[in-house]
Image (cartoon, rainbow over all chains, first blue to last red; front, side):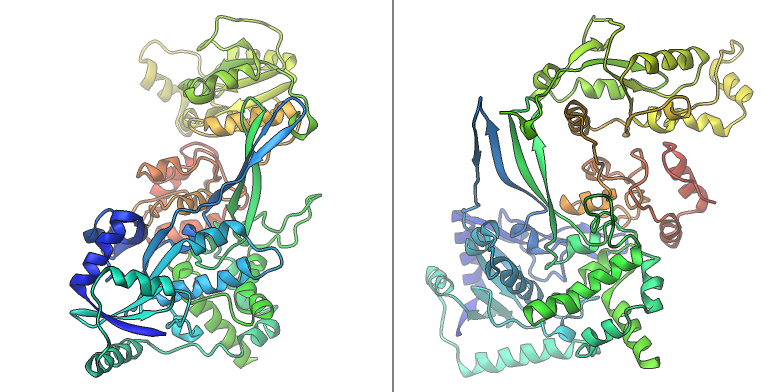
Length: 348
Length: 250
């Protein structure tokens, strides 16, 4: 990995240049919650001042720019005795600016599922390859538990990664196009003082984390506590609304339906991201339902996050961003649910 | 070539309105983009907002509104006899809707409040399914035209239509709509069947539950959540009872 120093003024110029030539997505303050907390979302930026890199988190992850909630997979048309279809991949390049380490780690996990499986997802790949990712370091956010999962730092999956050193950014470069992009402005080599400041900044961020969860035993505990009353207790609270999976940066389950025009000769195949907490998620032909109870569905979600995904991809699916816990009106959140499971195992 | 190999036949469709605001019928005349295609998919036997046709023979009857008078009940029975498929159109037809609220009050007082010293015949409000067999319900205040189109297509194909099992919340997330609870408002989104594309939250208003319950509404937890956020039981109950489609648990 290469490192350079980018003065804040030069960073401003770089963003302006990007805004002139391409779509730039970044964290933007869109309002406030009733408790006074600001609300940010990753949205298209129209000028530099809309960008708020001091944001704590966003409600919706950047996932929707790679796996849209609703996606037109193909449009088709019937003629007299024939039919044709059109498939369009998104190929316009765009910059996604200001992602935190957890969200870049989430993309790395999605990469495993979407690009390295037997059937790669061309829609995802076209978006991923055409997205220039600029990450940014930040202080720990409320409700996040990334450090417990080792996703509070990220070593790849981005083009550039910025650490704020006050008047300048310490830039990690992880791609050739990232290196080339920096040619648009003036950057300088890293001095010993920059390195010292960088390490101090990293140290300060690291010291801001609260206690971490011990998750090494979690996959085993999940199996041992399969029938735990912890699931009944938390399951009873579940609203089966699917918000947790919707705001999860790594949930990728979906359904496909056909939307047919009223003239019955045209239509589209539409993919919709779904959630394993929704009531009909495990319903199959004939009406049988593998997971008819709320608690079973909630448990299944945790199993996929921390056990099933691990079996398949050697790491948990969860990045500890805390979005599911924040968006859940019933207050179901992984640190508490997992904490209860670990406690149940200890006392059994 | 035909979709799923089914040759679409044009059913004869008649549209009727009982007690309600006639807004659902109006929705059928909306959506100019494909209104011509929509109307071409059927033969209108009766639709007073768009046509002067008034035929007694029809395959599908779309009936809007609740039943609040004796003559409405008689007419509904007659429509049931004639129609192969009877569709309840809108929340009034499905649940009684807003007119159902009058059932919470003394009928004589209610009549006087509205008609003064010229009382009119008025029965307790009933939904269509309290009187006749209903083959298909399309809830909503008003109905969503896109959903009506889908349902008409399924009737033409002879296939069952599946409503979304999920509540409105998912459609808010899909559209980057901020949670109304987070904005300090009461919202029935977590209980209410999706499919409206979160029209009200998108416009900045909490959900009022016009579409009735999602597949598995968690009333107990919902009420606990709303009370925790400072809403009184009375406020919550009033909201739950507004369209008559949701359970109003004590």
